[in-house]
Length: 285
Image (cartoon, rainbow, N blue to C red; front, side):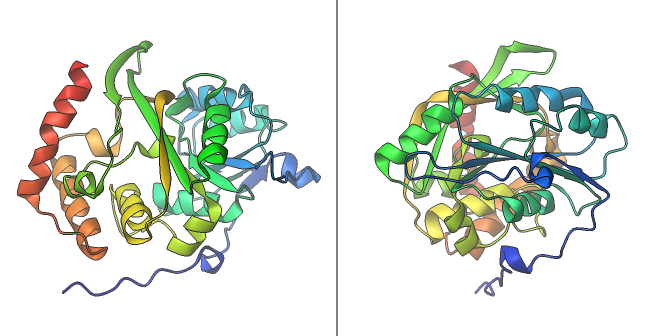
């Protein structure tokens, strides 16, 4: 039987040793919520992402939804990332740059700093599909009164952003989908901050699949309510840790099994193989 995992709360995470910081929050411009206009926090994690970060920032700036907080956590980049952050200092609510323990450590920092009622992750290889993405997300959260929403994700060619390589659409989500290693597209997932606070931080002892583990924890273990938006809200450049070869595939599958097991959901390598037809269809359709 798997030993229970003890998770610390976000307010128990170590305080950041900031290398550099900026944003309008430091100048006293702190956003808040109202019942009809909840604050949505977009957390962007970046490390040496100067080539793509500007697209991410501009896609947030261009959103028609009127109450957005953008927090950017940089892992101590040594390329031109800080120049991009300083260029958009008047449009970012808060950014910091310091060494961290990886992408999931950075996500935890972003959530701990967030003031929004709802939080989503838009990393530096991602950008909103259009200017109304957050407006659609906010409307669905309000209409259905759910804890979280997710939608469709287009994975695009980094050399030609108009070329869609794969359409990631999980409309009939269920516990079975988690058992075969299929989760809602993480960059489209917007969830109540209170749910994150109850569930605890992303597990930094996972190398690749801590986002999967978090969604198993939220959707299966904590049984949060959710709704699906059948539209593409986010586009992601292809590549990344979970799609970089046979070794990474082996690690991610082992971590998916571990994530399910630690949260009381049974699966194994044979069950995970059932996701292959879904992945093929995503590339065909």
